[in-house]
Length: 322
Image (cartoon, rainbow, N blue to C red):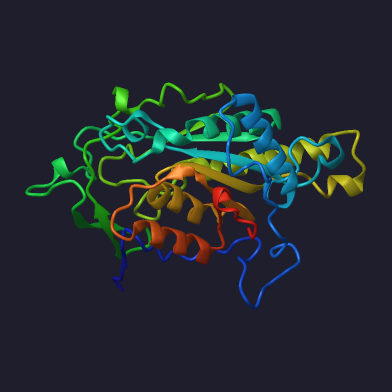
């Protein structure tokens, strides 16, 4: 029987089962309610890059429950974390970009500091890159009598039959493959060890999430990549001659995900929601994001992420209850 599921651009109802259920009034464990410790210096970030990096390092070490154990030799079999940096490209970050996100250049130094911290901890760093073809279906220019930020309904056929309807925001042409606007901002440091995931390159469908395109079925390849990394960690642990059978049973894996970038109310939001398919804990550092801010998009994004169990942390406001 044909069925139709309707999604709005600010409401995705796909059901996920996280490995650890999100916090609820009926499900409070000692881990999920442990206070989130704020470094007293974090509310006023230093302009010095090295000091900024040290502050983030201290912040993460203080809150290890939410950021994993890093490369601590004494805890090498504990949970690991990864950093996802979302769409830090010229068309979003530059004030003259085609889809400039207000004040987004302000996050660049903190993005770089976090990339350095995760790299020094020998943990996975992932960059997403919007990579649209010309005349992409999400562009207002591809629709008759439409202008940027109008909304239309897109219909996608589901693999098991039926279709899904998605309310698509129409955007100015942006991040077109091979253009300057699609490149990472020149001040962003992308290590050679980082994984770059390009999304939104299929003409018929947009892709906010780093994991799934907006048809809710087509994968970007990131999920498969992370599963492969975890499999490699498991095999490495099992074959290491220095580990006992007891330790081998505690093979490390990436169970924590930290997300920064743009835009908070679109690509960051949906990346965070979909991340629960793979990770036990998902943290969005709101200070290191910026929003497009269309209507109630920021309020709706924060509410949706928190309902999913995402820890949305705003350090500059003294957030101490992750």
